[in-house]
Length: 110
Image (cartoon, rainbow, N blue to C red; front, side, top):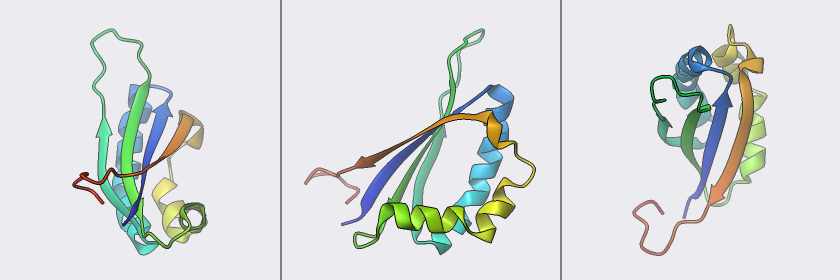
């Protein structure tokens, strides 16, 4: 059974969210090289005039025997990650939350 993680990135504004969407599209192949599978990446459209936080959600998984933090740190230290982030101001990310998800016995994703 895989280990799933929901990653939520809060960005400082709509332009930052659009820019980070581009960065995340680059992350997918690099993460795969480090045994991190991306299952989906989502944003929630803000209502016109809304001041709601701009968030990007990513559902990823790791092999059952892998240490999640070890795999993530290996990717974050990689040349692929550095290349993905080139030109993006990391200060545009206000917050990152990580939740490890445990699939139920009937979950299609196991």
